[in-house]
Every structure is written in structure tokens, then in C-alpha cells.
Image 1 (cartoon, rainbow, N blue to C red):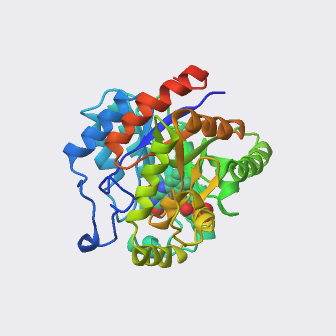
Image 2 (tube, rainbow, N blue to C red):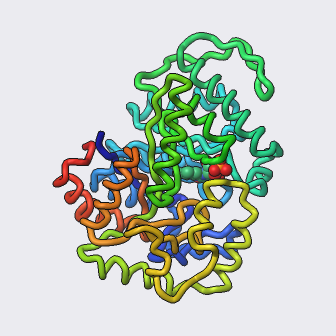
Length: 367
Ligand code: FMN
């Protein structure tokens, strides 16, 4: 086994600090770097230049559409793949299968797909989705079954609870087909991941929690006679010395306004997502004075989650210390890392010029 590094596309804007974050209304957004095509191109080219294999996009009302923004970036990049996130509830399986095939054909195979079932009812309803979470995962299960059947090249008839399709087919199915990544850690999510996904993604919980999740998913996948791969999504602050890295995150913490932390935590408390709840449990909504107070495992800092939903932890330390933590996750079964940092442009270089050579020297990098 070896590890693959991906980067993140800040399609909601970017800045130098965790406090430079998007909000749900344009008035409250404070992102010094707007997600213009010009800026996103710079980030994508920096990610490509620094050897990342792919770039994850978010999906939601607070960022730009992932299909469109990454399709635009295909023109100015050569190799990097885009891990396009989408919600099954917002598109039909046949259309998604067709979009993926088109993307794969036009890009020469540079699509990876991240299936986001959705964990925030407020956000789901913005897109007209009123199903509860268990029903959403049941729908994702049917959706991915239909997509894979269509990709197999035969016309599909399907009568399910959520979809009924007749003679569903698309032409010119490419090889390779895009792998299906999948985020979701709730009891409803795991069997669907085991049955339908290629790669299960989890937020950067401490390695022992990640190892337990990997074991559970492997057992579920075994029952389906399938093999899953596993990935972790986290921020990273990798520097020449440990002191520099911890000074950076101390700076993030010092800038945080307690009222913003409280408002963020109130909003996140409404999330139905098990993965999100695991992130919140690491800091419990309390901003300490000392960044080290949120070091929940050696080199793993939970402070990002005070102001951000989703990936709430960062791998922090010297390049060697971050590489140690990556190896620890790797021993727990993790093969793919989706990393990011503030700002995404400069931090891509810290990883590419500092962490990457360290991992290469240890012989754990996939490419
Ligand atoms: N949910 C979104 O609404 N938009 C996203 O862009 C998004 N990206 C995700 C990326 C990763 C790596 C993970 C682990 C999750 C992401 N999610 C996103 C959320 C999940 O896909 C999932 O639907 C939701 O958290 C419910 O999860 P649960 O099964 O843990 O309760």
C-alpha cells in the first residue's frame, strides 16, 4: 500500500486564516480572495505543480457549482484530476451518469466523483429535498445502483422506491470509469458505502477512531464481496519546524472572535451528520487560549472546527511530524489524503516542497 495526496479547491473563496470564511449570505462573507476563475486557476495549477493527484470540490449553496467550476479549470491544467462533489438528490441518476461520461471523455479521464448524500436539513431543503436522512441514504443506494448499471453499457429498467427508469442508457461509456468516493459515517451511510462506493472518505478524526471505522467498513464490504479503499480529509499546517507550525495555528486561534465561534457552533449543532458530530465532539465548542489544548492526538489540531463545518482538524507540525501522522493513518488503512490549508495557493507549496519530499524519502507516496 502507499498514499495518494489530493488538494482542495476553495470554490467558496480563500484567505490567509481560518477566520476568512464563507457565510451563507453574501453580506456576511469575508473571503479576501474571491473564487474567480483566475484565482481558482492559480490554485489548481499550484496543486498540479506540487504533485497532487486530484482536487476535491465542495458542493452546497455556499460555494460554486462543482461540475461547472472544475470543467472550466480543465482548460488550464494538464494532469490533475477533479474530485467533483454532487448530491444525488439534486440530479437524476441517468443525467449524473451522462455528465460523468461526458466529463471523462472531454478531460481524458480526469474525473473522480464524491457522492454527498447530505447531512444538513436546512441545506437540503434549499435544493428542494425534503427526505429524512435514512431515506436520503436509501435514495443514494438506488441512485448509485442505476448509475453503475448504466455505465455497464446495457439499457437499464429499474423500479425502486425513489427511482423508476425505463431503458436508461448512454452512449460512448469511457474507460476508465470515474471512481466513486463517498462521505458519510452514520449507521445509514456505512452499508451504502460498503455496497456502492470505491473509496470511503472520513473527516480527520484521531487515528484510533478512523481505524475503528475502517474495520467496520471492511467487515460490511466483505459481506458484499467488495473491497473498499479509505481516505481522510483534513487541513494541514506543515512547516520546516514544529514551532513554526504551532505558531501558525496559534495565530488562527488568537484571531477567532468568541461570538463567531458561538454562532458557528449553534449552526453546526443543527447538523444531522454523524461525521460532523464527531468533529464537534473534539473541541466541544470551547475556544481555549493555548492552541495545544486542542491537540487531540499528537500533531492533530481540532481548532479549525471552532469556525468551520466539515473538515475540522489539521495535521500540524514539522514535515517529519506530519509525515509520522500520515504514516499512522496509513497503518490504520488510509490510502488517500485530501488536504487543504489557508490559503490554498501558498499551502500547496508548503506540502509540495516540504511534506511531499519527506513522504517520498520514506517510500510511502503512490506517485
Ligand atoms: N456535504 C455537503 O453538503 N457538501 C460537501 O461538499 C461535502 N463534502 C464532504 C466531504 C467529505 C470528505 C466528507 C466526509 C463529507 C462531506 N459532506 C459534504 C457530507 C457527507 O457527504 C454526508 O452526506 C453528510 O455528512 C451526512 O453524513 P453522516 O452519514 O456522517 O451523517
